[in-house]
Image (cartoon, rainbow, N blue to C red; front, side, top):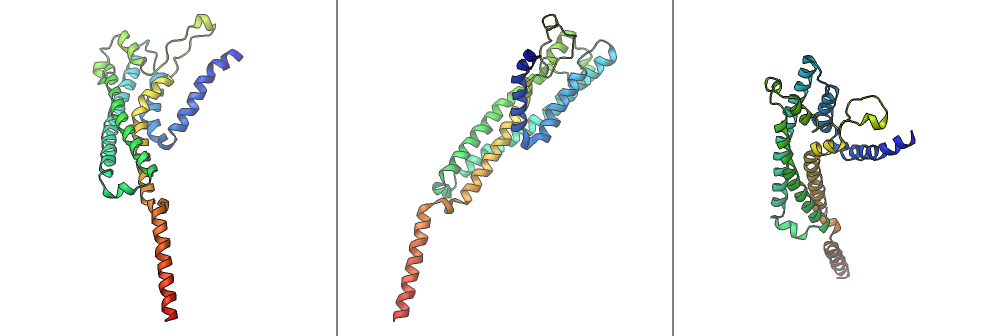
Length: 228
């Protein structure tokens, strides 16, 4: 029992990390990635025609859902990168606090990597486009499709356990949700940087000194008028 818990420790830690990272877009993460993969896991056995049809339907549904998500992510990431480039063209950004510029640069990096990571949509080619084409898939192609979501089969001879359903691969969960994560945080960093840009007068010591000098001048002039 102790050995089994130690083996599961990295997997459990990764689950916690993934849950924290995806907390701010958990609804999209569950709808576009986790729930469709859970359905695929449930129907991974295709011993008869009915179960095979259910598996193919689950694969087709995942392809359609993920294709729509990838399209949205590509457009949103492009818009995020364009927003950052546009912001740097503002004359006012020359006096912006350095933290805002750093966040905008990080936002540009994340949006760029989100577009690059969207190349994973090529993996969708290994999934059936429709239920009709899925019925023509051989067992080898179905196994290849399942490997995009599930861990390799357990070696029951070594573990001395009954054969169980293949578990969801945390690595593939990360790969499928990564473009959305990068795009999401690129917008978060952009908006936080913009908020700091608006607060630049608060953080700019030169402007505070100017305000102090103006205040002193007004006080002296008022004092001089009273003496006259």
